[in-house]
Image (cartoon, rainbow, N blue to C red; front, side, top):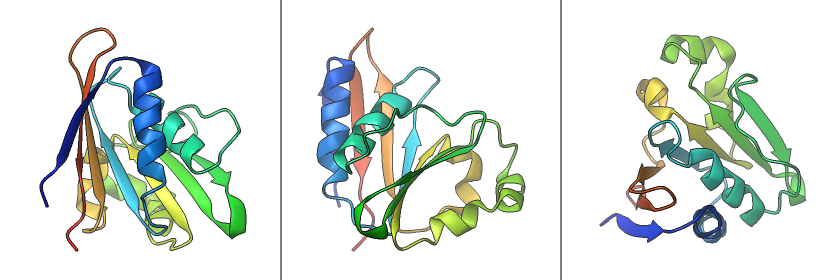
Length: 145
């Protein structure tokens, strides 16, 4: 499938794009967020969480590694941040694979490239590239059918 590519021109635009994407993602999916420091991964995650109905404050789980958000109907959003993880072995010791296998959840993974070896094959990949101060180019790759 051809990746979708679009631009956003503010944090609000990025949140709205992520909000729309959240409504199309099936539970049991993993979404890998890629982008340099300050690219907007957490802004994207905040909009995505809102799209799933999360009303709590959404922040990057850089120090806690994971934020768990309960959703309706016993579903979950897991927001993981692998920035402080050295490699996939450390992530496995932490139990990250259990999050990836949860069919009643959507898992957002910031700095997913640090655990690329253990990411599931059927995942959504979101690349966020900062073009200017508030302008982002976002590319979304869908898993193979």
